[in-house]
Length: 181
Image 1 (tube, rainbow, N blue to C red):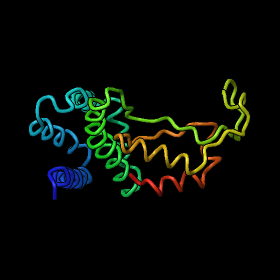
Image 2: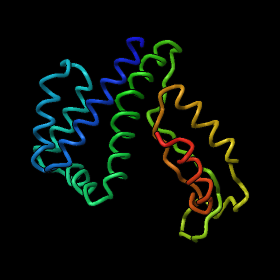
Image 3: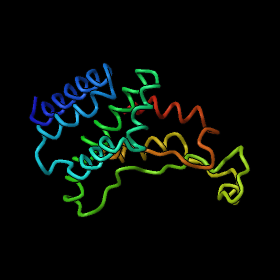
């Protein structure tokens, strides 16, 4: 096992332990967990993100309320959201993005907006989809290719827009099954 694999395994273990701890009493344990993170992490490590999280916890802000509302979700869904958002998109992804940004001297996005289709079953005033018709579609293979290329660069967050992405519900579900991370 190389150092990178070991580091990833330790991070996954830590993430799983943190999620178990939060499950017991999120409102009490979120601030405690953040205090622990602040104590054990290097000072500059995700400093601006930690500061923002700390402010939301201290102010009981909108994002803090949003996090607490995640505890209304099914536990499996909630854990997948946390693991994918925190572990894949933020920890692993941003580390890889930073490394490759320096290597290739370019910006790598944290998130990709992906329009699988221009089709829409709604007729919202002012929406661009009505102007383009319903014929523009990315194939499942194209969507898969975009996601695979993005993940190679450290991008794990994909925001589906459109048209109305769920007019392609089968493909959206299939792509999520293909890329559960």
